[in-house]
Image (cartoon, rainbow, N blue to C red; front, side):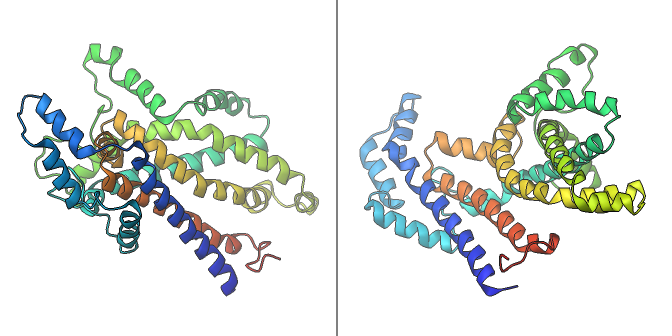
Length: 342
């Protein structure tokens, strides 16, 4: 693998991380709010009498370095990010941001990755078969609702699923097909325990509705994208040659059509993961799923700058890593692409 190619891709990776980190540092501060002062006044209005609010807020701002010039805060922030030190939340003193994200990020990544893979393979397979077997009218008719659902945001479809499976006629019969909130049964005190198969079953059961809201919305886009690539691939010379040589239908389908149509889909998958993560944040709020979604909303409401910066940085880092890995392995997947760019 040429060093010029590696340096270029790695350089783009670090540039992406730098720009994302810079944006997430400056954008929340454009509001000019003083979160400590607002929080103290909010507590005072709830009935608790607080003296010297301004002095307490000034002390807290000094504790977190918010009283320093903005450029000094920015330099310190970049140094912490370089060490993967995400700081400490302004309002959660018992745990660092690294600990908070370690507890929640696994749920988000698991839900995102599994849902994306399921939607990708099912949707891609449907699109390939739909074009290869054009006489299959049943599959063509089944695509219509999936195409309509692809225009609906994940969290909106999640609300629809809640209405259908929880707040609807099923309750009249006291049927609970899927739980409406949480990630596992909270009545078992020793959970979460990943070595317990009962816990794994409970986690899968609770994740079904959030995952369905992502999978069903994504299927139509993957299917239509694959169908379009299959239309182009079927007209290529090597497909006509394979048919003229008398190769079996399944060989032409799997070794020629699927293999060459799948490459743009893989590119779309890497890019789509980042978009799914942003959509999953709202899905987690709808289903009260213990991922980074609820943590991010809470940090935005409190103007918790360190926690906002940590969450967005980690999400941007995961997306950039996925894109970098795809850039590295793409020439290995497609022999027509060389690392030298020829």
